[in-house]
Image (cartoon, rainbow, N blue to C red; front, side, top):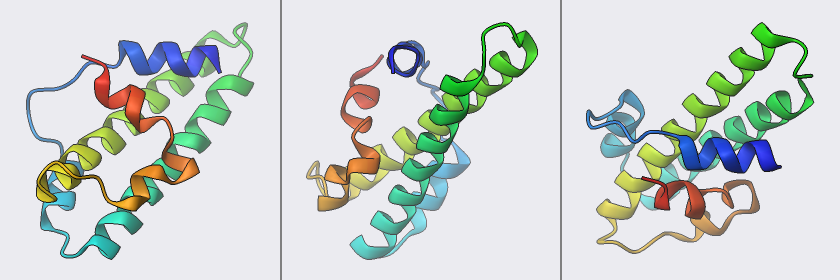
Length: 110
């Protein structure tokens, strides 16, 4: 779990809107937004599990797993920020889904 937290804190925030943010922007209704966000959170958890289970001695695979985790976290954060903005700064209930518990820390990261 320490690797996961370190990657969250080191994840750079990109200035340009991501394709994931564009999709979140076009979604209509809280149900569609939450389904999308929870799907992204599931992908983060799968990528985290892969990164954690990859032995450091497998340099190329470990690097690839860490990069995939970073990408998945950025996608989820981009979508979460759009959804939060669309709800005037209020977070829908899906932000509290256990699969999305990493979002608070990830969204605070610079």
